[in-house]
Length: 185
Image (tube, rainbow, N blue to C red):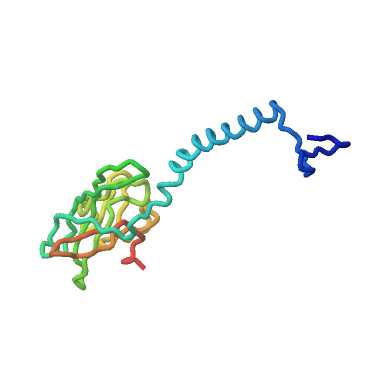
């Protein structure tokens, strides 16, 4: 190899390109940054997946849960119906027990009302206040509702009871998630 000025040549006369050599300090910096980046990515990926995965999981909208009540047993007098289903909250699965007041209205349609008072979340019962028969009554604060779930003016609740969507299958009653009461105008 021959050196002429700033240029280096090999035996054949071809010019070699001059590259700045990487110093030991730069090499260690690049290596440590690369290793640190991989370690950070390895630590952050599970956390990111943990935070985002439940959001990306498809939820079956409009799920209906079976009850043990036969459609043929539903009359015009409200009956308390308890039903259970499995709920998934993130990664935690639990059994949930819900309650509904179920009856057939004057048209023969099935009505299912939530027993949760709209005042403070107490549980209402049917026809338990002798001073006000044939009404849902909340014993905590004296809240009252008509049979269709409409709140009675002058009592603490400010909104009607929620209603469950209703479906029948195989002669049994299925209930969905509580929603705004469609029976009250």
